[in-house]
Length: 212
Image 1 (tube, rainbow, N blue to C red):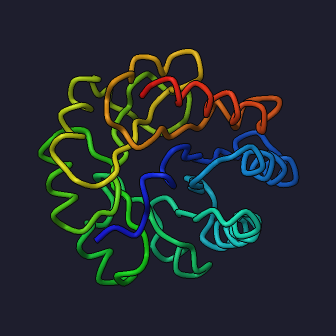
Image 2 (cartoon, rainbow, N blue to C red; image 1 turned 60 degrees about the horizontal axis):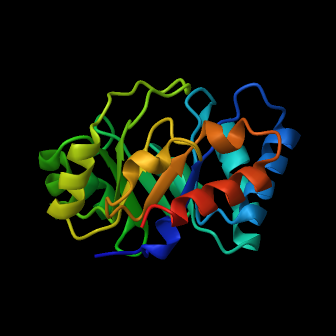
């Protein structure tokens, strides 16, 4: 099963609304999509379910204008409520196979993995893609464990589904991924904290093309 293409994984934006008004947040998301983001994940750790659904609905409306799939972090209920294209699950979230039973075969399921064993397990249970990291320390509120570039390379070889690197990546440091057969990169701060999100996306895409 693979509901997402390698091309769609190239530049994966994970949102962060911390410190932003809703209007500015939505403006940044749209600007990033205009710049060429290929996959979008909404991640909200502190909103109520109703607030999360409300914001995800607005983000989904924007994403659909650019024909970019929306993935909801953690929350299968929110993903289903807004008819998002998929859900992303961490190691402490609902198991991939159970999530698949709930949301069906046609939705995208991504999984965070940090070891080859976790990667193989997620693939066997029905994940469509993997997010591997953190490659660098991050400034987001999410708890992260560092993953070596060598482990990332091993994971890419261990599974046939797209693998993305995540964690503190920006246009100046992604060179460490050169030669590793990742499908793309997942970025938070490098886009969400940029003054010009559209420009930041274009610079990231240019830097990414130099990795192959």
